[in-house]
Structure formats: C-alpha cells, structure tokens
Image 1: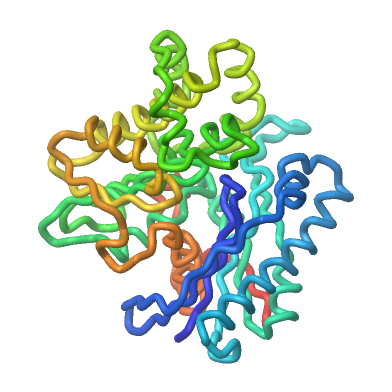
Image 2: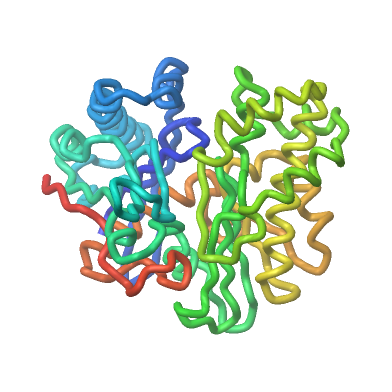
Length: 364
C-alpha cells in the first residue's frame, strides 16, 4: 500500500512529506521532500493566540499540506492517484499532556491544526489525523507516539538500540534486545533545536553548529538550567514549546550573556540532557540511531558522541531512513496502523491505561 506521511514539528522549519510503500510490515521510502514555511506563516503560528487566527491557520495549513503532497508527488514522479492513504500530524499549537486544573476538573489537552478535510478534498486521498487525542483520552500524555514506529523499524534480537530524534524537542526510544512492546521506554529528553533556533533567529538555525563552536559554555547558567524540574521527572513524560519556548528564551536573553555564549550553552543543554537520559535509561553499549534536523549540526553531534563513550552513535540513514523524514515516515506508518485497525500507542511510553487505535478518519 502506498501511504503518505506529513509532519510539521515544533521547530517550525517546514512541512516534511514522505511517500512510502508498506508491504507485510516492510517499509520502502519512495520519495521524501521538505517544503519550508514562509516567514510570514511561521510568524503567525508562533504568535497564534486568538480564535480567528487559529481558525484561519487551520484551513491555510490544510491548503499548504495538500500543495506539499502534490509537489512531492510531481517532483518524485509519483502519480498522486497511487497514494491511497495519508497520515497527517498537523501543527501543534498547544500540548499539555499532564492534567491541569480547569473549571473544577483536571484536564489534559492537545491541539494540532491543519484541516484534514482540505487535504482530502484537494488531493483525493483518505486522510488520518489527530493521532494524539485518543491516547490522552485513555489517560496518556499524547506523546511520544513515534516509539511504536521506532520499535517496528529498529528492534533487534541481539543489539540494544536507542532511537534518538533531535527536532524542536529531543526524544528517545529505548529498545532493549528482543524487547517486547511493554519493555520499551520512551520520552522527551528536553529541548532539541528549539532554543538554539530561537536564539539565532532570524538565521533560523545554527548551520553545522558554527555559532555554538565559537562561543564558550557558561557553566553557571548551564548548571542552573539542568536543575529544571523536568529533567528530574521519571518517564513517561513529555514537553514542548510551553516549557522551552519564547518565555524560556527571553529569560536567557535577559541574562545579558553574549549571544555566542548563549548559543553554546543552549547547545550544551541539549547535548547534556540527551546524554544523561540515554546513560540513565539505556543498556550499556547500545546503538544510538539519531534522526531529525539536529543530526545536521556537526558540532552538536560531535559533543554528543564525546558524552556517550561506549555507545555507538549513528543516524537513521544507515537503515535507509532519511534522518529529516523519519517522523513523516512515522505518521505514514501510524496511518497504516489505523487502516489495519491496530492500536499504535505504547502505554509504556505515553502512560495510557491501554493500547488504543490512534487517529481520526477523513474519507477521500
């Protein structure tokens, strides 16, 4: 079955589209492509706070997703009609997996925008969306969801593995050798590229870590950041822009530390929080398989390798999975699981009471 996965993450760099063929559990990527967000769209997403803006963005993003799918097919010379199913994550504008007090109730909630009706109408492809809601309804945190796919792709009978994704937020999936689904541990480790990207704005990202490599880590600031309560929480746990977004960056800028040193310190925060999470939860000598935009930051990856002696650090490219497209591929697989009526959350990762069918169906 030919399936399309569409992902736009917390880094807000653009729309990742992956078209894959799935046959008897085997996944073959056909074409992957990223469509960058226009600066004005990115700005509106970051500032979205009123109902009118959110409603308009919901429809606009549906149009942009549909156009990205069509253009990916065109450039990859893939007939649009050959794609039978689309898994669309949507753009997260709010995620609070831990219940908060609200009107006398404890409420956990998540909101991803990007209208699946528009995608289905423009492309003629059955679209599965809103993957996180059912897990939250089942008592989970609605994240992380990719561990189900990590388990499918990387589980090995002999080698313990850690699937590491360094997107806006960094997360890991720990897969012991011969692991059963309930033995998988997965959680967000903390910021990935999000804080770094915000600090170097409008450059959007620190190419190859050139800015961080020119700065000096401020150890006092770093140690204070690492004492954040989030890093001490045991999994399952999840975080996002609500914790490491604009207000977090504004507090860093208020320190008046030179920007080169702030970027170096933010990069080290990402590296240390990832390395400490892996060392604490993964078997010794695990193979660490990295993906996400962070793998292109050579300085960050070099620092990570230095802090993980005894672990083998590689990327998903070694397994035929484009590091920048792994999450888009993941949502293609999650849509396929919905089509097959297979529960696709891992309660050990999300904290849900049980495994549930994820997604909402919009027919073509």
